[in-house]
Image 1: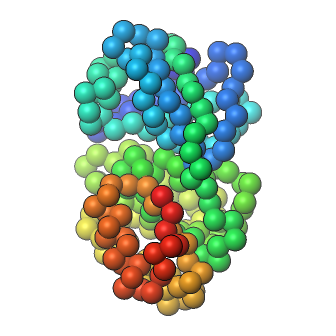
Image 2: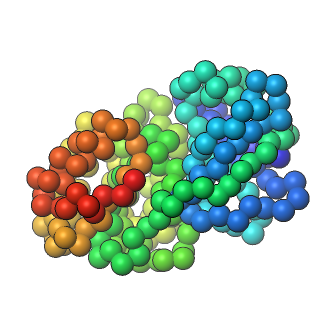
Amino acid sequence: KLAHVSHSNSALHLVFEPVHKGLAFEAGQFAFISFQQSGLREPHPFTIANAPSDNGHLCFLIRESGDYTKQLGKAVTVGMLADIYAPYGTFKRRKNAKREIWIGAGVGISPFMSWLEDNTIGHFDQATLVYCFNPTRALPSAEHMQAMTVQSGAHFVANASGEKALADTLHQAAHTTNPQDIHISFCGPKSLLQRVEELMKQNGIPIKNIHY
């Protein structure tokens, strides 16, 4: 059952609570949501934006970019029921990496929000989160992501526009850690992925070390 809804800059933040028993999942996985309402019954996949918790809540960040998500943004209300099918996917942290760089763009920040809440692996001091966002429509805000990151013990880099902060982060990492030991986890648009791979090549980071 939908317990919380917030709208911000053409995006939705949804929080579901279990009606009976919560779903078992791992940080970084995704789910298919089918709302029990006409026009919204077709299951659609969304990344879970929180780690498993005792209350069984599931959080999602959804950009209102297509016909379905725009319709969802207009119709969604607290109390709506939905069938949620999960877990799916194997987007996991590289637990043996000496240095991790997480790159999340827009709502692609979702899996990293779940990673930040998950203490299964720990070693957050070896991780740097680069949040690529549009300042005019960021959800969550850079301030919120910075607070989450600092609380976990990881490092935070805000890349509000362009790519300078992102490029500087990869450059600095490659000069303080053996590039062979740097692993990059990515969630975002294909155009940015291609640019990240170019930056990896420039800094001697093996392409096999990117995960998405």
